[in-house]
Image (cartoon, rainbow, N blue to C red; front, side, top):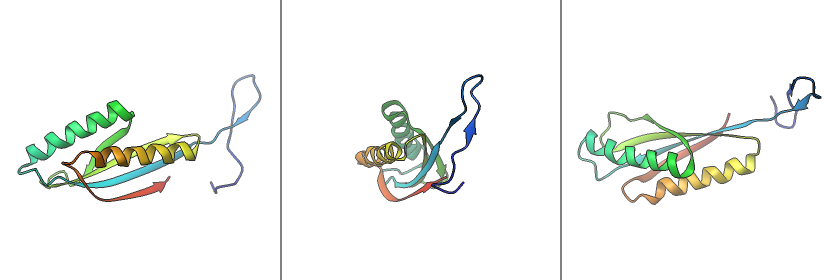
Length: 114
């Protein structure tokens, strides 16, 4: 659906029909973990970082790339909401959180609206 176009209509039982909009964004970030000398080291750092992100920021986050590379990890974070501005703030908070761990260096990230 094109931005600015008509919103989809959803039936809500006997009530009037209302317009519903959902915005979905995907953040992918490549992290460099220089302190890792083995996959076990890398996964130890990454597991803690992802668990803290889920717990503290309530993120939907997972490792999606470079699983067999010792010092690189690609992480994806999904955002869903009814307000793009709120999603943008959550995205910035997620990036800041991931960059706050000195063991994981941001090696580049991409953002897209789905």
